[in-house]
Length: 270
Length: 250
Image (cartoon, rainbow over all chains, first blue to last red; front, side, top):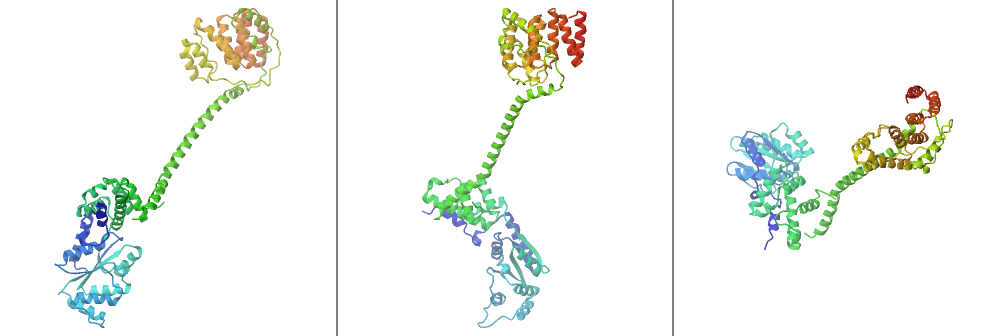
């Protein structure tokens, strides 16, 4: 029989599976803001925030929701080369694969996009945009100037990336949406909703407010860190459940186990 | 998860680390408390030493005090038997005048429990002794003029016994004053003499001695002693007393 903690542990495997999307007050606000921005005649939208604040899942979510209403495409992994990126873009714009041994002429692509103005409105969601080179970003900007292709650029919020945003997009980005770490209430809802989604009601109840505060302190409200921590917590619980059941309290996740998980992940040290 | 045991060990170390500041705070508080206790203790100790030191300070005006007699041995003191008193009185009556003031006089410690002894023996004056303890710094205030006759005898014996142990001039002065008021002038003279021997700067001791002398009929001797004292100190109280003795009012 599968341990209850094994199921709980698997809930927190970090993924951007749209089924795992949890609607929180802050994420709903960000979603609405992004949706509203995409309706405006903007050329580029910047979505930024620290890693693990839910940028990717938000882009994924909006693509899934709007894919039948708008021509919206999600580029989850950044292309390593310009060639690869333009191959992808060619396919999106023309609906055809690029013939073998051929390359996309950038000027021709810009002209093609200009010809699409007024006929089509294509939205490209670019995740992990910090991976693109400055030259590539300059070309993306030129494509967005055609007004036929709109880019939602998702960036990690670091000092350098802020610089990229300032230098390359400041004059062109019309909207900036920032995602922040969750507050205590949102993180509690996130954890509980995630567990309840998998019918792990008892496990959700075993995380009391005091312990949740500790989890929030360790993870600082970062969803990815929270996933990691809870995964480790349930992994330890699973071990005790199988090997030393006397050390585990089924009605409450002990503080000791949370601290052990935090030690393992390096949130605290000796 | 296979590394649970090392993780448990690490967690134990973490717990110790987490508790460390509290332990440090606890020890700091304990040390602080101990420090305060020691300070109080030292303060108490100093208080014990301060009393004699203060006495030295009060005795500082280096006037050459009048000493009337050599110290009579206290062993011979038997205040409860009249016959013995007579012998003592004779000894004490042999006042040798013009003896030099004892310069290297040892300062005796004033025991702080003396009033407690009085209160245990004299339940009727308990309240007064408590008051006395509170205002210990005020000298010569422990005279219990309202002591009842029945309990007084024991109390005086107790004070006399204590004086033999402590050589506290307050005790001898108290007895001198009491006996003088009761009209027992020999005893008053004796205790005034003891007071003067212990501390020759206590004027009241000298005045009681002179008054007791005068009361016992040794007027000329009293006048002579008092005149000499006035010459040395120019004490106003002594001058008034001298006038009274001369007029026969004492």
